[in-house]
Each structure stands twice: as structure tokens, then as C-alpha cells.
Image: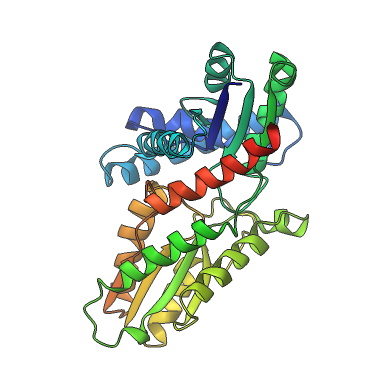
Length: 326
């Protein structure tokens, strides 16, 4: 028996030159842009990537010229491998990015080369959406048919882990640490602002469980914190003119300012790694907006990244799947 775990993520441009091809890959994904015609979807992806590349490059310049997502994900893979060895469940851990490098195709090639016989697919998205977990698993199924992976190994996917106990504990612990950084003496007056990546509202109307699962995660984290602080759930990173899941983080933040909130802790609820949405959108854009809205203190809880208890959560998910593959 030779075990493997494939970590899925979307990826991110590592240099400014990568921005346009990354955007093209992102918006040509049929699970992100629901257009049946491949030609029309690719034409639209080319148009969006061409129009947005300049603005996106400016944003990436503000965080050092590229996304740290690949390095963080590879660090998570290495930490997960060590955690599994500590549980006597050694496994090779691979990284496959849906829209960038290393691609899912590259990961599948390494898995075949290593002659893995038991494979767990583990998307790094706690809450399921067709735009993230769904897209990664769907793409892998196509590769499976092309390469005959299922005939060579047992494969088991993790589709959702929004209520995984160690994930909930990790989030709560990082929030507690974030609260301790506030200077204001009356910390019970700090408000929690959970911010998730938005998706088109029509996806939820057609049955995408992302909203319900995100709400469940928030409720469990708040319960772990003792339900002692006011909290809101909002959504960021909308693109284009269609109706997106709301309310937007920007709108909620401004409303909090109007209501006299003195301190806000932003929590990246649907992101497990630092990238453009945390490092630029929350840390720079929303921090500036908070100051303009009269909020005295605005901070963000740390991302999960390689937080030890979070790595344990991933290990638990993998071990449970491996035990069923015996």
C-alpha cells in the first residue's frame, strides 16, 4: 500500500507577468463562468483578463509583486506529511492548482509515477462550492477518465469540512489571539466581521451549499467563542455586473462605522491561506475604508496557513478517509 494526499487550491500568480494568464485560466473555468459554449467562454475570459490585468497587477504590486499562495500551500503539504507520519499513516502529499501551477495535471503525473495505491483528494476549501471544490473534483474526474487513475488506485474525495472540530477550534483560537492585539480596553465591544469570498447569487439559488455551510462554520466558531461578541457575515471579491452573494464586506464595514463601532476584527472565513484577498483586499483596502468610516481600530485575525491545529485538522480528514480505503 502506498498512500497519497492531493491538496487542491485555485492558485495565484507568482509574478506580475503571471497575472493575465492566471486571470484567463480562472475565467475560462466553466464552473466559474457558466457559459456552455467553450468558444464564447474563452473569448470572454480573454476579454476579462485583458481588461483587468492592469488593475490586478497594481494590486499584486502592493503585496510584493505576486501571490504567496503556492509557497504556503507547499508548506501546508510538507506539514501535513509530517503530521501523518506522526500518526503512523505516512503518505506523499501533492499540490494541484486548478488555475495555476503546479497544475492538477502535473500532480496526477507525479502520483502515477510514485505508484500511489490509496489516494485522498483534499480540497483546501472548508465550505463546498461548485466554483472551488466542485471545480477541482470535476476536473480530476476528467483526468481520471483520461489516465485510468481509478483502475490503478483507490480514490476517496473529501467534499466538505465546514464543521470539522479542529478547524473550528483553530479559527476560534486565532480570533482570540487577534482580539488580544486590540488597544481598546473594552474588548467586549469589539465586533467580529466574517468575510467570505462571494459567488454569484444564482449559484446558491440553484443549490450551491456554500452560503449554508459558511453560516454553519460561523455559528460553530461563535459558539466556541461563547457567543460573547456581536458578529456579521459578509462577502468580498465580486467581479462583473451579475448579482453576487451579499451583503458585501465593504457595505457592512461602512454600516458598522455609521453605527459607531469602535473596533472590528475581520476574519477570513473561507480562506485558509494568505493571498490577495487577505493581504491586499482586507489588510489594505478595508483597513483604509474602516478609518474613513470612523472605526478607531480595524484588525484581521491571522490566516490558518500552517497553524499546527489546522494541520491536525487536515490530518484527521485524511486519516479518516485512509481508514475507509483499507
